[in-house]
Length: 424
Image (cartoon, rainbow, N blue to C red; front, side):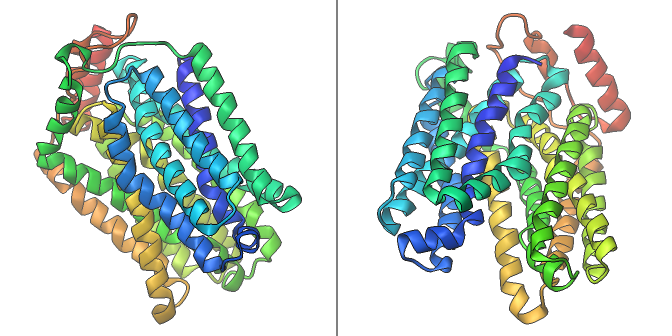
């Protein structure tokens, strides 16, 4: 795997850590800015909303740049937002800071995934996405507890400065080691790249594929957002033990992500179908066994194996329905973030009326809807063909190999992948 893919993981890690930081330090930030915890919660929403709405526009704005230049610019914008947060003297300034950082984070995620796919042979695209998204998994596993630890020991501003240092290191490594390849669609003339990227959104199938990703993540976060109160108030765990359980959950994410990364290209549809069915079963089991500590933990770890870990397969399916460009990948990250917002928001609305476990049942319903969204692909028995990428860097697989990766059921899917491998 190229070094650059690991650099993308480092950049994603620093930005995800910043995203989770506020959630881990709500009381401290509230005291520092003289606002309520509920108002601090809106900062989390603002970051997510900026990723969903602002990210695609910023990604479109950097399409004229080469990937390396775009990434460095996005690093710079994110750093402005993060430094602004670290030095914020008022709630209004902090709100602006989170919007700037969230917008840059979404555009960076899409651009980094696009570059990771371009740097490897087509049959390794899913694994490349998996490696890059390890930054997301590690943000949950290490970034959140690390930033929380720093914030509790040295103040919440120190936590933002720590993220700033991590981001600067990732940006410096990208500057030194990332290849300066041509932008995607560079041969299309001025504006051609943007027209090409926008054109794929005329395909109705792409919107259905994006909706599947929203449902997968929404189902997962309807439960994840409320693990803490469920484990303490229903399962009977102490407050101090929950962070350790969440670390175990993050470790399950890493394992599942690595497995899915190896299967995502050849068995995309099968991974998503199996994952969604399993997710629905594990969520239902978690809801039913929430009062049994051992059963609750086992089910929670099982959810960690099959929830957000479907990201590489989701990305592969989106890229086949659209293309591998930065804008498509950024819009996909927006739909993923939308799933987080919907899942957590519906859960919050349900709790006062139906109790703490009700968000988990909402997740079961969203997983079932996710399976329904796969039915058109299951009925047709074939995948949309991945559109050609005309400007892959020297040393990578020929463009023709990209177009050969088609989803034609499990047997045919394996055969096309072997064909791509032979061409490469």
